[in-house]
Length: 312
Ligand SMILES: Nc1ncnc2c1ncn2[C@@H]1O[C@H](COP(=O)(O)OP(=O)(O)OP(=O)(O)O)[C@@H](O)[C@H]1O
Ligand SMILES: [Mg+2]
Image (cartoon, rainbow, N blue to C red; front, side, top):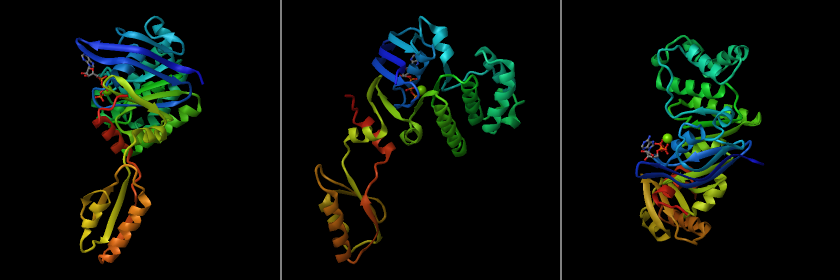
C-alpha cells in the first residue's frame, strides 16, 4: 500500500526546546494508525503540522503527495482534523457552527442538510442542536469536534485524542465509526495515551517519546519488542500457612490480600513455577482460586516502556 502520509526528518523547536527531533513516520493508505505518547511528547505538534496549523518546521511532510506547506490547500482538502481543544465560535448554535464549518470544507448544502442531523443523531446530540456551543458540556463539545471532522468525509481523518472525555457508550460509538470509515477507504490517524483503546481499533501504532518515534508496529509486534519479564499470578481461596515459598520462585508481591504476582527471572520457564506453586500451596493447607501466566496489560507495558526512557 502507498503511504498517504509521509513525515520525513521533521524537527520542530519552540524557542530553545526541541519538541520534534528528526521524526520520520509513514501512514499507509487505508490503515488506522494509533499515535501514542506521554504528555508533552509532541503528538499535538505533529498533528498540527499535518493539518497545516504549524508551518514553521524543518523537514518535509506530505499528505497524498502534497507538501503541507507548499501545497497547503491541496493537502488540507484531504484531511478532516479534530483538534485536542476545539475553537468553535461559542455564541453559535451547534447546528450553525457545524453548517458553517462544513460549508468552509466545501460540502454542498444538500449534503449538509443530510449529514449534520444524521451525525448529531448518532452522537445523541440532536436535542442539543439549537443550544449555543458555549452551553455544551465537555464531552458534548468533544463530540462536536468529531462531527466537524467527519462531515466532509475526508480521505484522511486526523483526530487528536478523540476518545478523551467521552463516556463509555460514546467511546464505543467512535470506535465503531472509525472502523466503518476504514471500510469505506478512509485512513485514520489518532492520538491517545491509552494503549488498550488503541489496541481495539488500530492496525499499527507508533510510540512517540521525547519528540521521536521510539517504536512502531502492530500491537503484537510491540509486545514482543517490549521484552518484559514473565509474571505468574496466584490468587488464593485459602492462603497456605506460610506463603513465603512464593519468594523462592521469583520476585513475589502481594497486590491485594491473597493475590500474588511472581515476576520470573529472565529465562525461567513458567510451567515448573506454576506446578511448584500448586504443590506447595496444597502442602501448606491452602487452596487456589486462580493461577496462571499474566496476560500483558497494555497500559502497564506502555507505562514501563516510557519509564525505562527507552528510545532506540
Ligand atoms: N505554542 C507553543 N509554544 C511553546 N511550546 C509549545 C507550544 N506548543 C507545544 N509546546 C511544547 O511542546 C511540547 C510538546 O507538546 P504537544 O502538545 O505536542 O504534546 P502532546 O504529546 O500532544 O501532549 P499531551 O498528551 O499532553 O496532549 C511540550 O513541551 C509543550 O510545552
Ligand atoms: Mg496533545
